[in-house]
Image 1 (cartoon, rainbow, N blue to C red):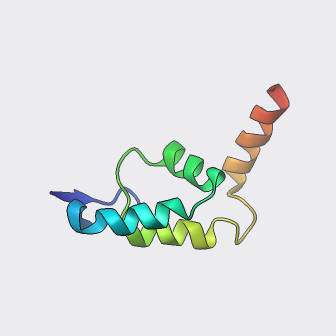
Image 2 (cartoon, one colour; image 1 turned 120 degrees about the vertical axis):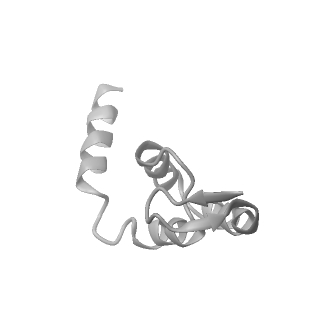
Length: 76
């Protein structure tokens, strides 16, 4: 089944990409997985999952995401 990556727009085969994506996704921490769940409604290709894992903390956390998390933790 052909899918379009919600992040980069690349077309990929879900069955060919699934094991790679699962492996890449399993390497992400909870914040990275939450970021993907909150910002993307559809599948991501393996390259995008790996890129999020690699660069998520490169500049701290995305300011929008960091601010949103801080507000939620202040409420709890």
